[in-house]
Length: 419
Image (cartoon, rainbow, N blue to C red; front, side, top):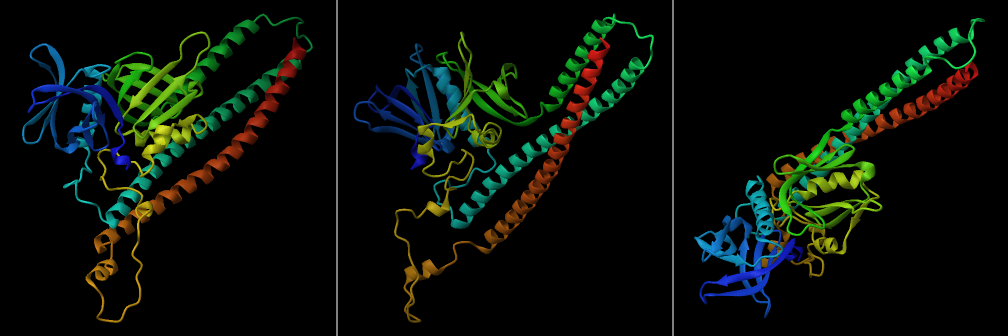
């Protein structure tokens, strides 16, 4: 059912070549097809599979009207005009999904043929494997952050030891002058600069790219501003860039107020302000599933799934490059009668019963599933080991932070006595 739910729709018109006239209606893009429905009687006038499209171009009709043309296999050309918000926005979205499908290495041959249960299982496990790999990347970067924090605490501790010796020397002599220290302001400026530089270095270390996906970017509030670009997910921030790699906006993790998931291919990221407009970008991508798996971990409390997203969850989402039948095999028989094997006398098995008793997973598929499950097991064990290491690191960080705080407070009291 969700295969036919539109990812994006635009109002426009379609040219019927046999009747030599334009018909108003709606152009819709789904996971696998592009189709046009008339406005008057809701009749489907054109339905094109993305895998059969040869070319998408922006042209002019009668050298005057701006149109969008789609060339299908067999040199069949379809003309679309009066597209809203604008022709360029529709072109960028269609070209993005079409190219991502062509470039995908998992494009199935004979897309109309249904997948076997073994292939569905393989697709399901490969999706779980990709998600676990993304989780491993996040855990790895998180572990690096803990290591950097531990190194920073060690440096602070060594500096505090030096401060302790200096304070001891200042407290001991009887000739120590009264009043404020003349070099205090110079030392404060020096320590402030050192703190700033250490913060900058720490921030630079944390800005590692977890994943970056090509996307269609639009700023909410600007009409027709849908252009190619990319969404980059870093360890502690998000970046929105244009097609040339120029930075459009940088969201720090604490600056992101909410991430709305409109469907498995489209999200909006918002940063709220008081007294001026919010900064909100809408991101549409055929590879959004790769970024969503990471965003759900990093922004758990800030992600909001809209009602439109629930429509796509009737069957699990697949990217345009994944096998079209890949889905939740456990719900495949929901609402349908299932065949239950019954005991029958030998020699009286019908042809239908023989088909039911045949294995649904071949030996080759079983071997592939075995290897994939072994890889999943190793990934899960590595993640568990990393989590245990990080738990120990957190305990050490907690005790070191408490100890460092106590030393800083003690040194502060000693310095106040000297003033």
